[in-house]
Image (cartoon, helix red, strand yellow):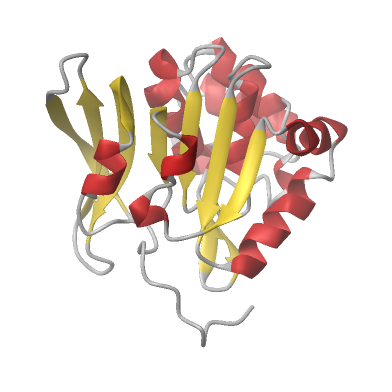
Length: 227
């Protein structure tokens, strides 16, 4: 049903995702309504498909953002700490911040400095986004997301927006007990799957293989990549 969910506006896109069963929770619907994808996607922002944002990166399809947000939702309480790895355009970082209270915090991390700067500019296009950056509710930083960002942890929820070769131990170590990691795992031209990994209060880890996907890889920074 994803291919039927495109719209002529942000409101139409979200409405179609909901009517097609791709958004099930009203908290997620409201959070996505508040973030205009046109601020984050320069091309076809209301199509339910991945779009290029430059630097060989993409903004994921809206239905995938909805799926990630709904999967993490049980751990997105008002004061939660959230890490968004491969934050790219900053769109999902903003949506996740909408699902927290004023004392919640979201860190978006990407290894391409130009993308991080663009994501800050994208978020500042709305008054709400600008206030999130100014208040520190959202922090967008440059770094190797595979190593997480220990300074902001432990995290109640971690989202990874590019395909990792494995569920990196640093991310699991920075996950709170209890906490949840949503991560695509697999090779670029091979099979990739979403894994939902829960850490229980006693520190034990349970991995659940969910569904097949196709993501750009979570890789080392390549200085030869240009916009």
